[in-house]
Length: 401
Image (cartoon, rainbow, N blue to C red; front, side):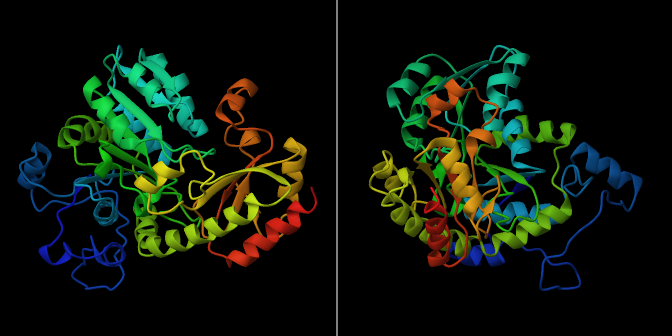
């Protein structure tokens, strides 16, 4: 866990500058690129120093399952972008997601979540938490009245993602946070689709923000990681820190270094990917083989007005419903020549997947229909290729439908 206190000279730096400069701690060798500290443990000058460290009287590195200099640099840099005081890194996004809830919940507690979630997140809340005696309730995240009803009685945690995976539902962070606060619940927002570049949930009232750093933070399909960010000191010190120290979902120093370098270009990448996504969405919306385009940047999206309030742009992700169901969707995917079929997202390469048979295949047909994950739905993560080449590849693939 790292606490972020920017140097006075850095407070006025803009986001792109912070992503190149903030959080860096140079070794005595004064290297340009941040050092990679591949070590599991640390040595002490004396037995007394070790004793003082373990008692908490001396602040220093103890064991890389707890903290590591490379992890610290990554955490501080991400915290500076998010505008958070605390950042904790994890071995994967799902490790972060599970820890965000498990660290603070016990038997008899209650969780309210939006129904539209990534498949593994839905599994944790629907299947795993009830095994520990935790009550869970799902609501239509786009319906303020559904949130109000669910939070009319006490709850301990609220979890949702906005935009959601894969149908890009937009949830009113401010309204839900206000309702949750009255119910006594902490609000955890999965901000993966929006990224810290395009949306700041903490500024809108959320208590905790969670990321799969595997996605846009790395941005080049190289490694896995996760992160939790918050300004809630009690949550960090009393719940999250003891949980991760004793359960071990630690990010490796090498992966932290890769993610740290990924942050150097995240603003450039996300902004360009968003421009490409907006152009692709506008093109696909007018294609005769497409029944519907789901992209928050389009006026046709039901959450467009709210997205304009919460996000800096429509984002890098969109989904389309191809006329003709699964067969047509598979035909489009198999006809792509440049774009890859992959369940990953946030990559510099444009990727496409069929959620009904991949990321959300474990849901039954009725639940997928309820969530709008039809057999014709294709999720697209727009990359950094030339926007015209992305459009042309989809155009030739759609011509086969």
